[in-house]
Amino acid sequence: MAEDPSDIRRLENRLGYSFESLALLQKALTHASAGPVHNERLEFLGDAVINLVVVELLYARFPKAREGDLTEYKALLVSRATLGAVGRRLGLAEWIQTGGGMAARSLPHSVLGNAVEALIGAIYLDAENPLQKCEAVLRRWLQPELDGLKGAFALPKAKSVLQEWAQANRGALPEYEILDQFEHPQTQAFLVRAIIGKQKFAEAWGSSKKEAESWAAWSALQELEDHAG
Image 1 (cartoon, rainbow, N blue to C red):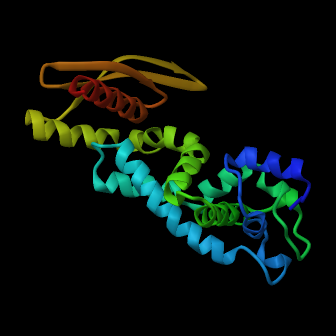
Image 2: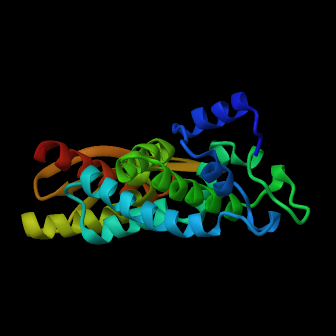
Image 3: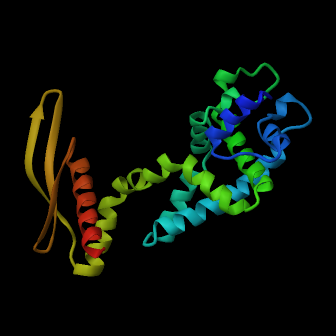
């Protein structure tokens, strides 16, 4: 990690946190391949902190979500792929100290994700209000993933969720009506809407009947949620 004060400030601006202990910051960004002083213990601590903070974020953000949905959301947010993507967005490859011939530009997701965990561990040890500060930092780092959670999971499950709701609240199963279709040798599309009893919901296009029905179910769920709110 660069020791020039302006470079450190640039890094801290990316992270959204200014360290009291630069030694902690340096350790968090030192891979085990670089020598005996490295970030594995901070990674262990950071993993636990991230799990707790993410659970709190999800609990507050989705007050109507079921436990199973929250569990899936959490699994996505704390996954190595997500944390690796966070590390890449933050540009951590520029700062991570490695050995053994690792090239900074080609650091794997696992190394970047481990560094993200180690940084959270370091912030937890460094901050005056550790959980509050870690929550603020993680909320910023994970914003794209947090905003995309419903879309990541909702569409494949939309038909089954709508069916459960319809049976519980209307005593009926949803039906799907094809309103229009477009077919071409290279492409096709279907316009579908969901119907529960006498209630007809917004129509939706899809590149297959199955996809159109999923989007129609998703639209119906959104409409029901809007009315409920």
